Image 1 (spheres, one colour):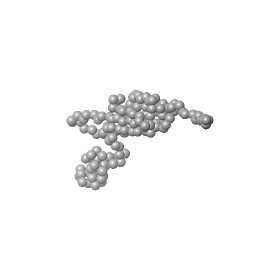
Image 2: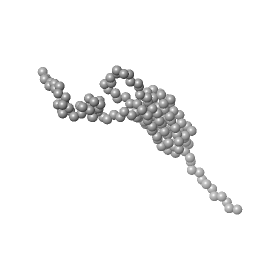
Image 3: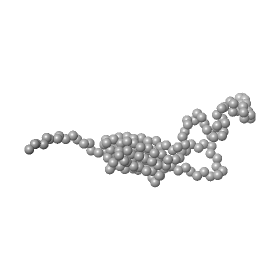
Image 4: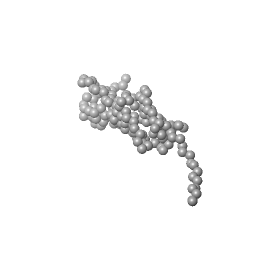
Length: 147
């Protein structure tokens, strides 16, 4: 049988674990991974033979809270996820969900066609597709004849 020593002396407990005071007061875990409280969606950008596809994981964000714009070859996506109202008397033991505003911009290549852009939001995944322009082919320039 293991005997576990119990120490009710607070000063002794803090001297053995220097982070226990911060953990008790602020709910801070020093080695937990340093998660940010700002909402930062993850993005992926890929190119296919006929389009560029940008995807973002935005769970809990509605279409009305997302703004997508394309200006001078730069695709900008901004949005926000509102925090939930806390009710008095509730005690959180773990609070890892993130809320707030986000903004990302992506420079698109010259082959992106700004007139062929579509966006959809399905099951918390934002998908923006940008069509490609037909590649310009070189053409032969003839000399003009002098009169």
